[in-house]
Length: 440
Image (cartoon, rainbow, N blue to C red; front, side):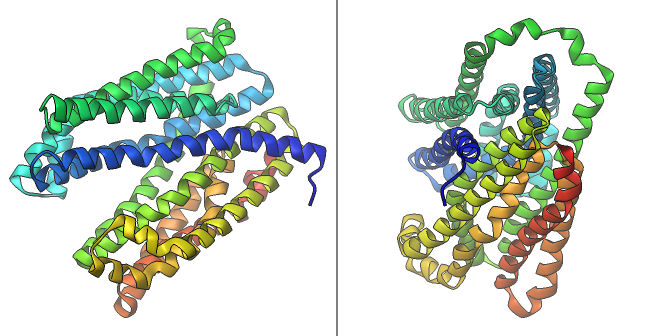
């Protein structure tokens, strides 16, 4: 069906914002693959385990800090739509202040955190020693890593996805090159991989600040340090971000819980779940691009009080989400064996994965609605509703698993994962009339 001129214009805006995000997202797995490949050339399996465990330590820290990106994107997108660039600039500065404050706390409490981590996740003395070497070097990238959450969010809020794409590409390329140089060419081992990441994060931050000046230097006249401390603005900023932080905690409970529950079922279920989740990540990079576009555009149209464009944008986003969901299902169905071959050459592991491949086929279609609503809710700064939806999702996940596990075993874990996505989708769909459509 031919799009109307207005719909065509909005569709172009969606693609303008989504495609660079997709291109940047595709580069992300290369870093993990490169780190693993470099660690695999350091002499023992312990190096690979140490990098994996060290990376998990940062996943636990940084996963919950994604609210810095989401909150900054939603608030600044609405300010952009209103033409309130003073508010947009002060939102960026508030985000940077919070990011640097959290980074300072991480640096101060790095050793207690590391001790707690290994109490929860004990491992061999060799792997622990190597992982701590990695952690205590890479942790000094925290100020840059957390600041980049805010930088990326502000770019999206200001309707620019080229900046985040360039930052991600620069970070990932420098990370791979520097880690290879330090770890292998300079014989620094695990410490070299960590140092490469530190260099990449600070290079990314400097690049981001340069791109901010390049794209948005005309807004520097709106910078007023007193605006950062306006009580009402700070209260709203922290309220939105507190809800998004709780939402991130819920996500961590589900995704970490999935891995931990799989590990309790045995080594083979853990291997199967790891492979399947990595394959599902390939699809998520595509749908996330449209979710980011949803953050930017829905926030902008709310700021503009443009009800027609707002509703039309939501319809276009869901059209794309369904297209991606269907195409991903087809791609997984056609290429399942080829993808398994990329992930493992062990025939017994491939055989163990095959009974669960139907979940790979249906999961994109099940999840695309929830992921798209995420972007829309973030743009609308409907943080309380998205938080409450995640509460239902956590309950659906754990109730489904523990009720079905006695009869279905490992299959119950996949049903639980699907149940949390259905719960998220239903909750946000039911909340939408009150928390989304009423905002314009």
